[in-house]
Amino acid sequence: MEELTVGTRVDHPRYGEGIVSKNNLTAYEIFFERGGKIEITKRNTDLKVIQKNEEVSAKTGLTIAEIEKVMSYVLDQYGALNEVVPLGEKWKGGTMLLQPANKELKPKEIPAEAFFHKIVMLRDRLRVLEQNINSHSVLTDEEKVNIQQYITRIYGSLTTFNILFSEKEHYFVGSKSK
Image (cartoon, rainbow, N blue to C red; front, side, top):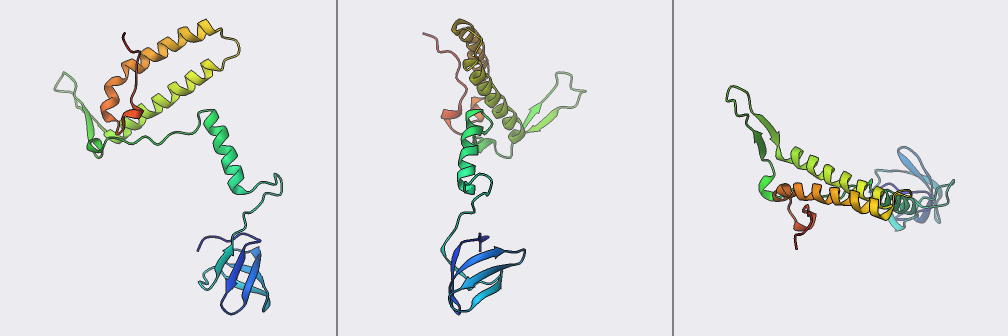
């Protein structure tokens, strides 16, 4: 059973309907219609939730769900939320081997997942850079376009790594030749 918050309405086969008044470490204090104030352990499986109460922050007056929604919005606006980008199925569990031309030197083996994660982080940071350039208050539109062209060329240089992505929507795309 998930954690109950103060104000949640519950039903118990013996005591009837009640409202959680305290959430202690190991038990709930519940006021029941039949039985009054009773402490019931959190392991008790007889409690059925009738109506869940979202806990409201005393400082903000917002529920946890509302705070999470606002935080997600703000983090997304500033590029702090990383999109889950799946690695292509054939690469899972694989490795990348960098073999020096000099056979006396040891090769470097890198897990495909680790390398892929670095590529995705690079892409995410380029996107944040783009957002910062486009929203910059001092740069002129011409300067923004000139800088943006370099970023587009970087994306073009990274298209080799598209084979690692599971879905085409996540591919790197450079400038299209006409």
